[in-house]
Amino acid sequence: MAESPTFDQSFDELVKLISDQEVVDWVVERVAERTPENLEYLARFAYMTGLINKAEIRRHLGLDARQAKALVRRWYDHHRRTGCGLC
Image (cartoon, rainbow, N blue to C red; front, side):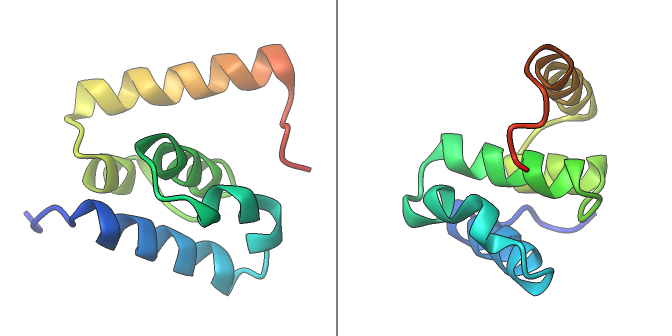
């Protein structure tokens, strides 16, 4: 299994993935400040837009499979309640 990236590596990788799709303008406020909350937001954005999968969520956020499943469920529940909020 690949070694988990550091916080900064994960943040940089997610920003690059999003930037490569030319949609970084949608998350520019989240990119400006490196916080755990913004890292999770970038992971959610990348997952919901099909840029990463659950295994990559686990790797970037340092979660086990159960934690990642619960987190994704929470993201979908939030999405159902409030809508996309991204576009």
